[in-house]
Length: 287
Image (cartoon, rainbow, N blue to C red; front, side, top):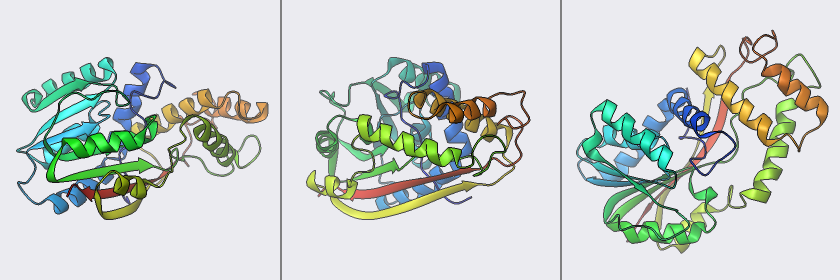
């Protein structure tokens, strides 16, 4: 498996009910976890062994990044920042189950509003959260403020929704997923105008020194495991809901076939599903 970064929008994404979103985020972590380990190795090499005692996880969601950070930096404590109390409760319950509840502090905060006093920290981790903010430049300035001098910002962003389907799914017109992605890109341009922006320039404007950048690609080949298949199913359901008014009736009908567990063409039974995604990452230092 090639590398990837932790995934979907956190509690800012209301395309799913909260329980469904939490499951999708947890599946994202399990299916694409190899990449997260790779990215954290990249981060650890930049900060040095034993140099991380306190971490801020910005937009922590269900805790994918939080728990990986705790494992990578065994002497560290993590402040998990998120706007959604249900996500923070889910994270706290998982932390208790894992026996690391004393190393995690969940803090509810609107990332577009006033941030609580959570600094100074050695590392700020922001995974696929900045593009949801109304004013990412302001948020980056707050991240700089909470970092100790010499502290590191690790920022990852996704450039698009993951892809799962072959070009010809055997029903409807070929090219379904490409058309859906084009429609989704238009929706993002309207509702998430910061996604796909020049993050390196924004980071520099916020007063950081950008030290490294990378583009990572994940490819999980067919046949998918049951967990990965469930991840594909929930992801495509989310896409179907989000595109109900943006693609043609024929494509919506094809999506309905794919989401029908009883159809041989459906995601639940297809042998040709795979996962493909691209993530971008930056490491930047507070002078």
